[in-house]
Image 1: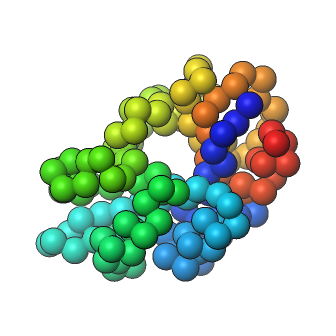
Image 2: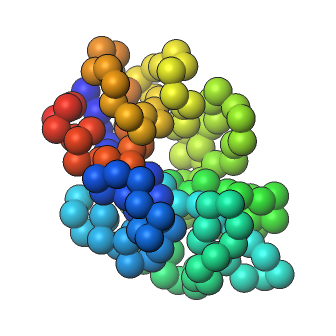
Length: 152
């Protein structure tokens, strides 16, 4: 029913700001068999992880090593442009703010909570209040272990 289980920002069991958008947490969830959604910025030619603002500087080569398991939320237009120009076929990335849906560069439908879904949807479901009845491609959650128990 669900092909990809995606950790939201590197969280495993709950929203944990000490784990969010931290490269060691990202690598940890990938080592545990999950994909990971990250928030990424490009500022003055440098890459940074961080949700509300650029926080943790990172090298593009560190991301290339784990690219097959990343879902990159571009946090500014500069990064979106940079990825399109230099890494369009390597990374799966997207931009959204308050949109119900956005299409990722790998043609999956990143879907805001409680919106209609299709088999190509990746749903953001942070609370798991009700069990999903429709097949989707993936689920992104702060408690990715609970999500996997519900749907696997």
